[in-house]
Image (tube, rainbow, N blue to C red; front, top):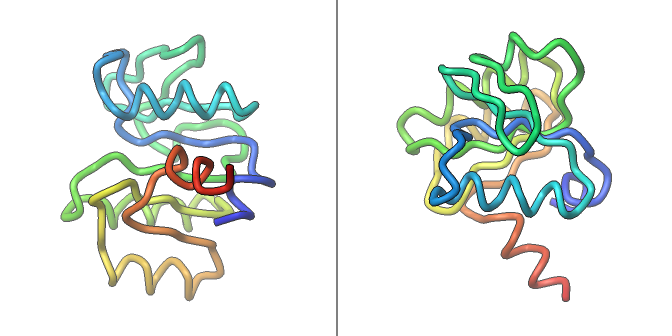
Length: 127
């Protein structure tokens, strides 16, 4: 977790739309305020918080460090697999998102991964 929070700069945020009422938007803003570059991943590929969006992780034309997943547990695993495929360094499943099989596949592939927590919570715990 520390690796991702401290050392990873580019965060693809899966499910990020331009709706400021959504948690994904709030967390993307927090990531930006902490100096991270966010990359919106959404089927409509919107520009969000000044950053160009992409329809899929495979469409992103530069390296991604962390894939931050705001999707239901039953559909989150495919994004962990895509993170492995694009060479990301880590996968972050947000609060309430749990897929033990995806966790096993991802960590066995050598990526750092956390589930069922949020960067905002983890930064608060650190003080």
